[in-house]
Length: 123
Image (cartoon, rainbow, N blue to C red; front, side):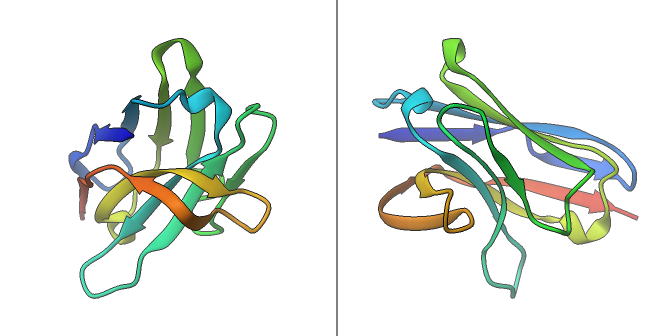
């Protein structure tokens, strides 16, 4: 399983970015997928996750109303649209699968991770 996260960059406060998580070696449509982030000196936190059927989505309170997770099964890719970005959104963002959606976007023993993509929001 290989996950490739991309789309990070430098953006001003209030700006937008769309992160992509492309997979190879696994069909993402069969698994719940999560986005996580880790800021310098802080613990990793779950940002958002989506079920395999796309019927349920979950968001951290800090990003609700600003971030939107979605998937394109034809492209085997999961996206994270990030709007109204704030300086506190600055972090390395990672995608991972499979994750346990029912337990609140938690990782499991066989969770695979992509490399991070850095998001920097300047004030």
